[in-house]
Image 1: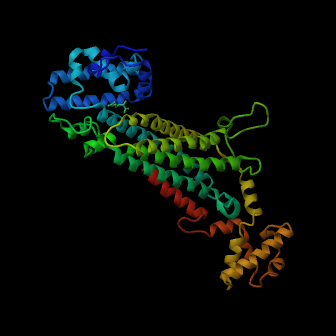
Image 2: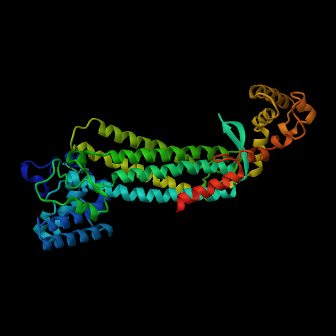
Length: 463
Ligand code: ARG
């Protein structure tokens, strides 16, 4: 159960070969190979810097870069052979480099350590993923904007406690979702700013004795600057936690959105339908068309929360500086990235297939006494105190329930039994259209305001 240790870049100090189980237990190459592109990018910037400060020659730097580029090609064409014995992406690439270009390849690892190397790789990788996720958020946001434009004046019941509360426009409701996703995007942009600093140069933990030029490396790699403390540089994974927290919030929002779509598509509500291509059937019940996409998104939310908890827990007991625990950051981070990306793709695809049953929404709003507050406000305008108006309308609603009528179906004499302040003009406030149109201020549900909200948000998303 052993393998030949002399092949390992750190093998010099060891006299016994590594146990096979230990190789399997400690390896990360099976998953960290996804960092290969960034590892090579970081290495190229590093050797350029080594040549600039004359730690290696220009010629050596060129040879190493050529070797690394060949390895990059081999990896992208699937020809690269990843070896578990070589532990991780870094040692696999470094070993292959020496194999390709000979001893000069051994100079690559001058003045750095895998500790600052891996911290650099993850930052580069996560930065790219954040940009892609922001793109996906934009796609989902644009799909919401389009739907809100179509439904800006569609009336539906607005809910509190899942009880019909006041009528709202569906466009307004959709724009509430857009606000959430817009905040999500700004959180990611914020996280990107903080992560965009170069940790390379910290070496194992204390820095290095070579005359390195960290700013030069940072510039080549598109970092905004360099990290300020070597111990912190190799041990910090705040950025992964911040990202996962942002990803958890995205998932929480998508999950709430899912929950509503699932409720709205159910026969009990029948408010919306989704394209057949975005639903699935039942293997036993031929009539079924199930909202599996939103259900899966709701279900996947838990795994991203789990990823966040794993990362927080991973870090909480670690003394400075680097500990091998940190290798465990990757699978959680990768899972959070993959999941949130897939779910955003799902929503960007699903939203455009949503169709709306305006009658069902309207009917539900009309039946739910959603304009009761409007009636109370009407009484206040006509001289009553709000508390008295509240009481009167409560009684009116009770009467309407007993007589199986909506508020606007009550006759004027029926309404006037409860207050003589009620006049013929009351019906305009009992109508759903009047109710929504009256909430005409920034943040209100009036169709006119929905149009303005769409314009504002559209600018923020697309300019
Ligand atoms: N695979 C390791 C990780 O992901 C790379 C750094 C290993 N460093 C070390 N000193 N063993 O964290």
